[in-house]
Image: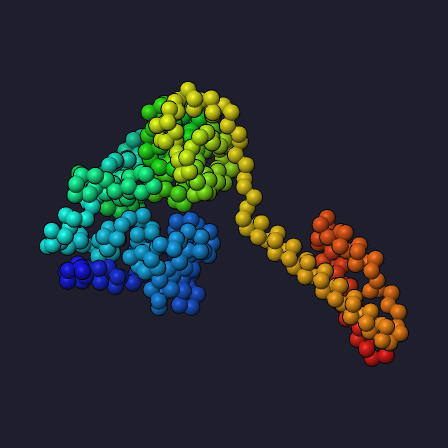
Length: 387
Ligand SMILES: [Zn+2]
């Protein structure tokens, strides 16, 4: 159970109005009733991000995950890609209260820094640092997940008011891709730039003298600002071997259409599920083998968009419904004809068959045609009924 001090601290963080935190970060939203709506600060768009001022919650239709909590603490965790304590510290402006119960604490795995990745500006000044943490048990072993180290990331920026100190958030920090100076040099020299997911992979490729970059925070945090630095680059996209990996490179590629000189996809052979270039290197992959793969790498092709697919299916369904309706109308009309003895010159089988045979090739025409047919059929049915 949290100590009273910690409980009160979390309470103070939770009491920060979500609108206040939005305003403090300079995020502009439009007022619509009790909601504020606008572009998502992470994934953009026009109106996919919203906050509810009465309920004190937030949502992004595109990038909020089920695991993200909808309150103000969850908002900061999501936006800064930080853990719960860091979010509370950002909101309250106070560090977490010290834990008295050290016995309990030592039993839980502790976070240890396993790597530090500096993001620099064009000339190599550090703008911010991403820390990679692993979880170490009391017996010295590490917590694993899917056979790899369980990891967490923290971000920090140099404290502008106090040299040598750090602030644990990225407020006001420029968005730059990882290893920017090398990216710039590679583009200037006409050499390829690999885009991977994660700093460790970029470091591995860089150790093989291949310019490589990534964005802080992992998949779904690639921004337009990152893409701007890859103008005229010969880009090699290196996806991790899972859906998230492919989704990520497709987002990156889409942002580079028309900007990059070339966009290729490098699929590493023999990767296990969720495997990546680090696994490939451990299994014997080398720079020479990589060069061979790069020279045969196909150009990136946009995937058939999921939304387009759904629209197509919906259109197909409404078309089928329309045809069913026409067939039903024809039957009704025939029944009315045989009852009244009136001979229709519209509701005849050949016309329906013509419509059906044309449905794939010329859907718009079919729509216009069927609407006209529908209204005239209603007119006919009515006149038939009155006779
Ligand atoms: Zn979003």
